[in-house]
Image (cartoon, rainbow, N blue to C red; front, side):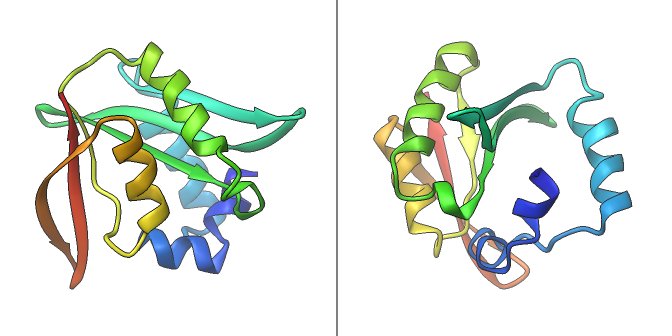
Length: 134
């Protein structure tokens, strides 16, 4: 399901994240996501269906948060609710997220939970916003 969600063209464009082919995707999840004990990884379900995932990981000395939801679960408050529950588990502060600036929905979800805009970043010519929860 996560691979399918990553391959949704609209979602990939909003996230400024190019979809990976299946083998690269699976290797990444096995080694860099599930294979790192310090990561916190949660699957989000709605009515028994997989809606998406939320995870936290270390990038050098910074703890980052990321999430991905299937498009049919957007705009229903699912991401907002799931992030609130996740933040009860993930206690590391500061916690950072860096969504593409054009991903207004994602930025709003983070700001609803107290993340503050701290910096503007440029990834390959696309503006991203670094948000930090302290």
